[in-house]
Length: 64
Ligand code: SF4
Image (cartoon, rainbow, N blue to C red):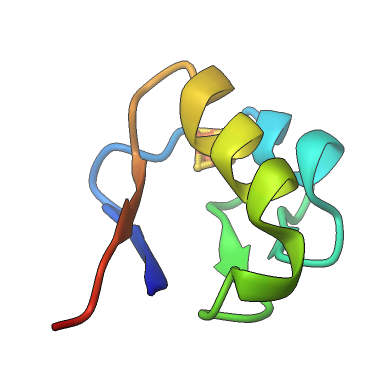
């Protein structure tokens, strides 16, 4: 399981950082940086970040 960011969609709103500060960092001017690709330890926070990202730039994919 891993987090995927579509950098073209991210507009730096930082909602993801608010929801899951251990997974996402958003600089003042810029787009999201992924701090940990595997959300397993913080799945609830990761799902909230995906849900509330205003541009739908985030997704969680299941590895086979
Ligand atoms: S909430 Fe979405 S648009 Fe905002 S910084 Fe995070 S990924 Fe980018």
